[in-house]
Amino acid sequence: MINTDKKHLVHVVKYRWCWMLLTTILLVPGIIAMIYSSVTYGNHSPLKVGIDYTGGTILQYGLEQKLNNSDVSKTRTALEKVGIENPYIQILNVNNDQQKSTKSNINSIISIRTKFIDKDSADQDKISTQLKSEYNNPELISVSSVGPTMGKELFKNSLIAVTLAFLGIVAYLSFRFRFDYALAAILGVLHDVIFVCGVFSILGLLYNVQIDGLFITAILTVIGFSVHDTIVVFDRIRENLRYYSKKMTFGEIVDASVNQTLTRSINTSLTTLITLFALYFFGGVTTRDFVLAMILGITIGTYSSIFFCSMLVDFWNDKKTVTVPAK
Image (tube, helix red, strand yellow):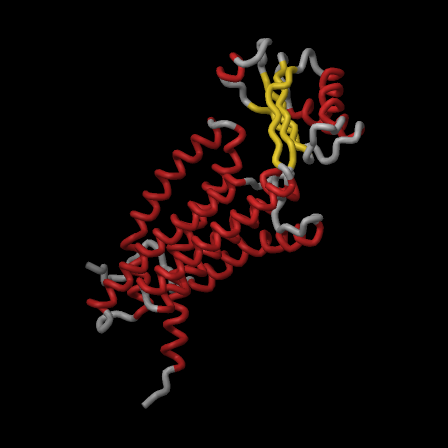
């Protein structure tokens, strides 16, 4: 049953231009950052990509002493002075398995990510020598490399995966709903993906945050979550149109439908976000960027399903009503 007294918690139609302005504010900074990144990065990528896609080597050293951010900055500067280009350094948590596989009692791990180092290169020796001069008994725990050719192949496969997922969603929505509903949902997906990519583009420029295979996984998950939430709202709009199209305007039905599904959407997103925040603050460093992408995607996906997509459907319905010639 629709509450006909019009006392809704959220007004999508009444404040339609406010939601449009908010959407613009959310998207424009990220779009500018991606354009700037495409111009300034050597590979012309809108985001700063990691070694999964460009090729590179990660070396992890176990250290007996605890490290802090000032140590990381000092080590990065020292490595650049000895000829290591653009080293990306992280401090990682130590787990029991890593302690068992080492000879010494390590309390912290320093991870150094740099360009691809082949077997004949002296760069690994330079890194080891530099760390020995700064820390006591650094122990090389692991070395993992991705060649440039493999990196390009992984990047191509990731783009194919995202494209196929998007085309599948387009086909389903076109079959499931009428064209304007499907187009609004598709634009909602693009809205969410652009926002997440834009934020990571900004983080890449400011904090050297790089994307990897886990980021693509997060994007695919966000796409599915966003479409699922939007379909729930659109189903309620379509159902209410069957019974109340002669009693209420289309805008009133949209407002009522959004408010009927509002609690469900918020509860679903909130319970997911609680888990993700726990993973972000208490999980490992290696998955933190993945979890951050999920947090951003689910938050913006909830917003777009409630406000952006519903607003578009109402806007296009008004345009169709205005352009219908009078008899």
